[in-house]
Length: 399
Image 1 (cartoon, rainbow, N blue to C red):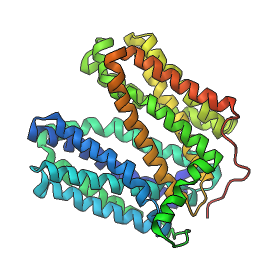
Image 2: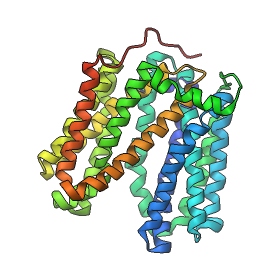
Image 3: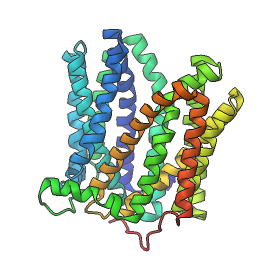
Image 4: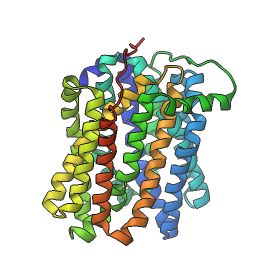
């Protein structure tokens, strides 16, 4: 996996993402802290989070054509620079205004969606297909490493010196990230210019017309709609069912994040021995079974084991899924398809969050976990029985 870093272009993209993610984790904790500290009202916290989901789900696909029409390196640098300015506005004059804070959060999420589409559609241009899984694994590692290493640090920083320094650190991280991206080779657009909204539609159409994309993204979205109840009900499960308190909940979350990093050691050898498509369905189906097991066996020791397994399996299906989508997407549509994929997953997670809130009071947290896990397993099994994810006859090579 680490051999992908020998490729100069990908190395700069990796380092840029690492730096910006460190700042983003610190920013997120500071943002939610400010929203609650200033209002003492959880409604504002929900509104800010909701505005971010809305921006990702709605504006993501609408902004997708930009990553196919313009140089992706320039676009990523631009989004980082604008985000640096927006974050700097918070300690300067937005920290006491909740509506302004929510507007900034909305714009930040929209720019993040555009950066996500440009970044993920760039990876196949920087690495050969033989190293694509390793490159995607490293990008997953960056996110998980930031979760493990910097979320707790962000809490300590905000608690001891206040949120303002956290926002300045985040703004600086975006500036550094933009500087690192300047070392990337030029990544000119491959799409023909035409009507903008026709370009948006052209990026959405392959999601149901292309059998590889339809089955991969459709299976992931269905799994996310049910599987995301774990994220929504994790605190309820730890405190109400396991009786291990908030501290225990933190331990379970850390175990899952650690498992996701360990999953990289499992995923790469499996993809070499089997195929991306089989590893994807195997990982997703097994993830569903382990999620169901947390409801069937509500014991702290088993919950800890299951959380490590869930982290490992999450990496096991996410890494090959990204590679499958990147290779199946035509190069001239890749940015739009990645934007649509990101928006689809955000929408599915939002559905799962609402589903958890509706079902838990009626069925209890344990039954919701059992039903959700089995739904994910059955969705994976159904796709497998219908022939699985079609394999690409040929894979494009990097420039």
